[in-house]
Length: 488
Ligand SMILES: *Cc1c(COP(=O)(O)O)cnc(C)c1O
Image (tube, rainbow, N blue to C red; front, side):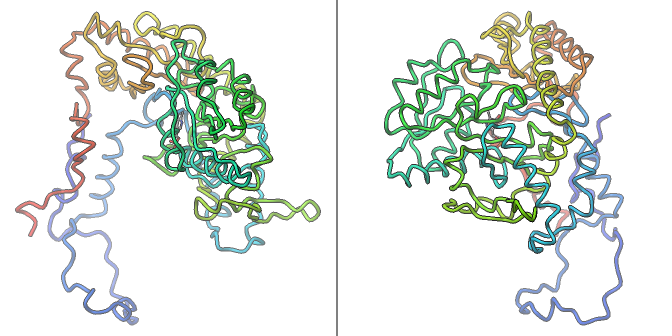
């Protein structure tokens, strides 16, 4: 049921004289008035809305129900791994012994927390097949940026002047963005018809100026790059490094490892692969893992364990590039990842990946007649279908389909990414969904494909906002309530 109250602003709900709890004035001297210069103090109350506590709680609770979330809806948003976030890990990460710590406490006080972070470093190193880990980066994109700074420091140390970072045409936008921010020139490979990296094209672009080749594996089309070992040889023969964008690790946990197929550096997205919630742009965690010869350049502090005493300490790698995040990174999300890893264990992780791949192939097959996948064959944990035929025959584009799915109670898949597939619909079911949910999603897609075109063009019909002008919404967002006649 639509809740109109929820679409009103607090300022519109305001009624003069409404209050929450008001405490008596303190009978001790007002410290604020004493330490702030008089010219900064106002005699008037700020023009804030006046509401009772229930007014405020209902407002925000109702607002929270206007959006879709993993806890309320199936969310097959390709590339983002929107798997269920187990509540058990929320509870564990909220234990008083963890949340009541302060990062400025002494290392002695922090032994328990440092122990967990140390174990997490070890587990991430093992899963990556790369021995040295920094937990600092706050997101995948920052992990990319950090690893590129590490690469930069490494080459500088060797007096090698390498200025280029290469990536395939299907790369996630953060790859070139990170490379540019880290001061490299970006070189994009020409798209190949097959969806895989074209080795001849790669060979023609790799030279003694090449610092890093960034590649997502499985790649953005949800296909495992079968030539990854050869790709790594090409880079290593030229003295360059291979960066594995680990956003798609959910397909290969415990099955294969970036370090084993030639990667020198990688990032994890703890909020994707290891069930940390994706919270409206943050907080996330993007730890990186690197080869031994890059370990000295990692950002500090790293948690180390004294072999004899077993105590944990914070240390800075010898030639560290410095901090990229305050304290030890986004510990709250790292802890959720830690508990996830401990809950599943090595066998459980492998099963999670196998189920993620099974679910994707099952759904891909169900949707095949309406949304064929141009790059055919088996996929990994996600697939990129095309709505081109649907658009051509029925006038229903990828965007129309995405919008109409909201009326059926499904979050839309990723659309129009990657750019190499026309009318792209990128579906990532994840392993946490049941067969019944995948069947229902497929039934909805098939139903929409038969619906009247105009009706689909005007969808969604059941959401508070239907189709905002997306460019205008991005360029001129209306975020601020305009003060009207009812406000002084
Ligand atoms: C999500 C994603 C990123 C960026 O990760 P964030 O944690 O959102 O910064 C990079 N590459 C790929 C392939 C992704 O899917």
